[in-house]
Image (cartoon, rainbow, N blue to C red; front, side, top):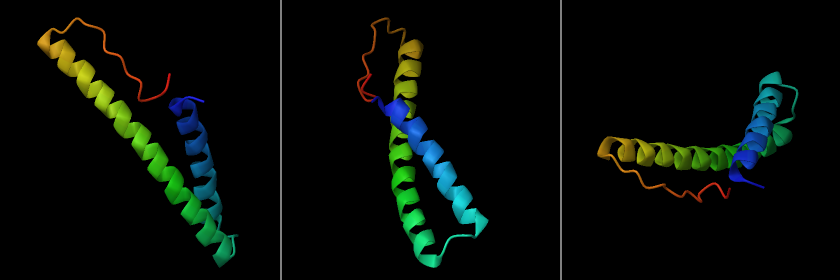
Amino acid sequence: MSKFKDFEKDLKILDEIVGSLESGELSLSEALSAFEKGIGLYNACHQVLEGAEQQVKILIDNIETGEKEAVSFDYFGE
C-alpha cells in the first residue's frame, strides 16, 4: 500500500480516536491506550507530511532555477 493510502487510513483512524477521547466515554485505561495509539498515528502522518513538504520545496526550487529535468520521488512508494 502506498504511503498516501496509509496516510489517509491513519488520519481517519486518528480522527476516530480523537472523537472517542473527546466523548469522555472511555475508561482511563482505554483512554490511555487510545492516546498511545493516536501518538503513533500522529507521528506516522507527520512523517508523510514532511516528505510531501520536501517534494514541494524541491519542485519549487526546480521552477525557480529553471531545472527542466524530471525529479523522481520514491518517498511515498508509488
